[in-house]
Structure formats: C-alpha cells, structure tokens
Image 1: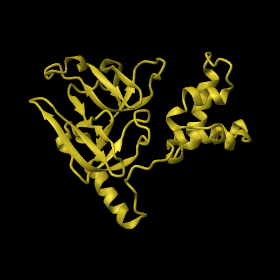
Image 2: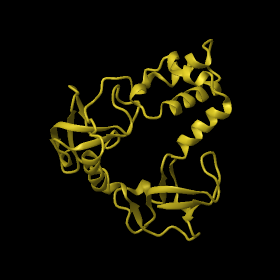
Image 3: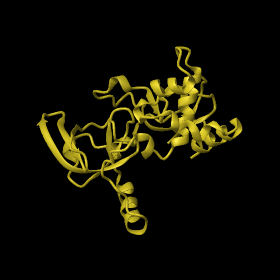
Image 4: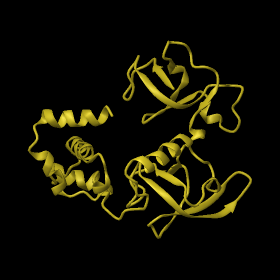
Length: 237
C-alpha cells in the first residue's frame, strides 16, 4: 500500500509517496501490541506516526490494522518443513548467506513449544551448522513466490538452493552498488584514521562481504558521471 507523507525530515520528503506493509490505526483493536498503536512502518525507513501520513488521494489513513507481512512470514518454526525454500533477510548475520538468497530446508528441529511461541533450529542444504529460526533472519516464500519459482524451475535455468561457500561479494548480483556505497561511506567517515578511502571502507563496511582492494579496480578508471549513473540504475530497479 502506498501512503503520502505530510512532513519532511532526514528520511522523508513532504508530499512524497512511500510503500508500507504495516500500520496500526485502530484504537478499538489494540490487543497486546499497544506500542504499535498509531504507528506505521515504511519499507527501508522504519516506524513513524500514522497521523503524519495520508492515502495517495489525501484522505486520512483508515482506522484499521493493515498488515500484509502476516501473509508472507511464518511466526513459528513448526510452520516450515523439509524441502521448503526460505529467503535470508540479513546480510551481516551469516558468513555465507546473502540477503535475498534462497535456500532449501534440509531438516527442522523443534526444541520447545509453549502457549505463545515455538522455538527451533533449521539446517540448510549444503550447510552443516544448525541455525536458529526466527523471522528477523528468514522468511518463507509466499504462495505466489512459490508458484513463480516452480514455473521458473521448469522453463528457465534450474536454480541451486544449496549454501555456496564463496565470498558474499562473489555471490552478489549488485557488486558495483556495494562498491560505490562502501566508498561513499568511507569518504564521509571523519574517523578514517591513517587508512586510505578503500582500506577504511573494507575495514568498516566491507568485512561482511570479505572484500579486497582488487574488487574496487573495475571502478577506478570510470568517470564520476558513469559511476553515478551505475548507482542510479540500481536504485531504480
């Protein structure tokens, strides 16, 4: 769902539209989530107040709890089983798993169950370690994603869902974007010490990708205009 901002701040522009998959704007349906009442979550931007947003046609947000996340993410490890495909949601949490990467469940181990939660671990195909299951780190494919994946496996090149023991940088489909962001953060960091821009970028931002100086060489001979265009192309995808 798209909403329009009524205010400008460090992350938002007044009058601009943003994508949301959750807001709690129903004072008569609070339940145990009282903290979320009156709050809206914008993708990639965090939580804000519902009163600071309208629908795209300028109307106040409806007094409902809008939550499409519940249709995508399982809340319990018992909701997944061997053979399911899951998506990694974080980059820095695991050494070999990449954000957005799809992996097949090899085994599931439910360790405890209470009246309000189920705790357990998962093992991914090609990976010996057991990983704790939670929806901050992983999500299950939606029904539509599962259907699309099944079709692509038949008509397109078959995809590998095993964990690959490669540098995250080698596995990434957005290498140039990662390089540009790493350089930009390093340039703006006033605590760079005696390190140059590339080494500081690797030290502070590139460790999760196991980046090296050689990874930056393809950018070194490009003019600034071309680098900006490369990054804008990624941002518009």
